[in-house]
Length: 194
Image (cartoon, rainbow, N blue to C red; front, side, top):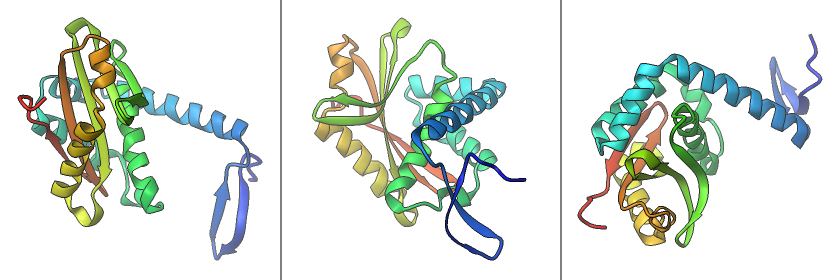
């Protein structure tokens, strides 16, 4: 069967082919369909999504790590992270957005301009006046501690909480999330050090 939605790039290596989405229109269709399917699957696992969301909004970094880690172990393959180094973080960023998309009452911003740059993910939970900043890093060689600290430093140095503060949100949680293959580490910034 021949799929006309994809184009072969380069020469085949045995039974392996490099495929590409040929244009933006088809890329948009693929992205929409994949995200719809992803959201549907996340909603089916509503209990885990709710535990993840509760941990996130309550400042329970260990709970966030447990739920996100369990989700990664259950759903992805380490082959999913076989992309160029600079794109590895985007994979995990996308997974988080898919999970957060199931939280209908939360306002979720991806790559939103805030402070002096673009925060990975900003969340506003209006009914509780809670804001959340997520900065995702890929932990090279499994160095979770360094990656989490780099993420927290970036949130602080770039003032990624500014957009939420401008919206009147005062209770803001800041998380550094480091991912490596099918594992993650989640660290919450000290709330007293605004």
